[in-house]
Figure: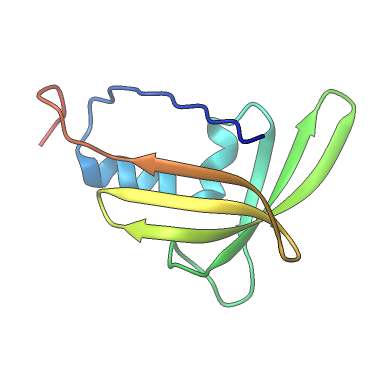
Length: 105
């Protein structure tokens, strides 16, 4: 069974400002209720397809680490990554950035 959840938000910022914020995975703890820290793995230092990062998560008394791999990286337009465990891909996160009339230049 595949579950799909989609949420839309209007953010008063330019597409590149939004892109810069969401692709800096080291900031993920600023807005995630579970993930409190992320860091790039190996030589990765930014959102390139194939780059990986780890996330440290917490929910109540439970703590765990996840690994993610970037699957899409289109500056100002799209950022996506999969949660991975070996060959298993257990989640997919995607951010699609679309300018609106309310977006800043």
